Amino acid sequence: MSLRVLGVDPGLTRCGLAVVDIAANRQATLVAVGVVGTPPEVSLDRRLLMISTSIEEWLDLHTPAVLAVERVFSQLNVSTVMGTAQASGVVIAAAAKRGVPVALHTPTEVKAAVTGSGSANKAAVTKMVTKILRLQEAPKPADAADALALAITHAWRSGPTSAPGSPSSAGLTPAQKAWAAAEAKARRR
Image 1: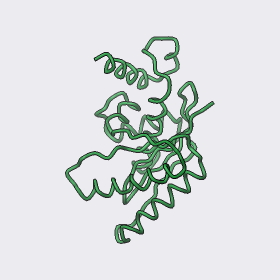
Image 2: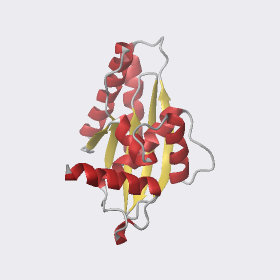
Image 3: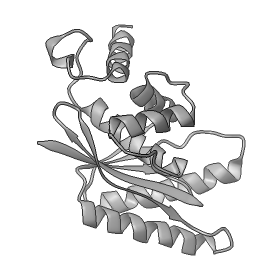
Image 4: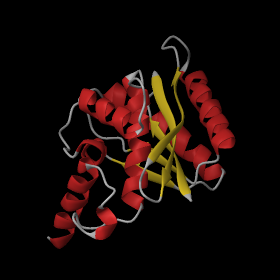
């Protein structure tokens, strides 16, 4: 039995979408990946409608068990944050309309989950996503790789976790083991 997760890296100009199936042993398999782009010269309402239509198509086509979205965080560029928040709202509403649970994950959490380091750069995340999914080439653009990382993060986080070295952690990657150890340490505090 596997868990199907739709990961979304929200953005007004580029919105990354990715569907991943995660087996009970945490092996991840790519189902679909893409990016919805909206031109800046198009009005905001039309851009949000384009994102809404695309996410609804993906939800209907892939029927995920859960939707994982990057949590909007404060940046210096207010207009970027606003666009990201608006795109996130459209995505979350589409999932809610279908009764699909939504989980929010911070960029640091995603980086730590797939690389073992919360301060990893985009290149490191893309490299690990490529390796985890056993892909021949790296997903492009970065928004697609980020959406894949979000889906993987959610599945790994929601699945069974155990301390490194225990029998049930034997099939985990080094990044998964490091992440499980960091989570266990944080819970002890």
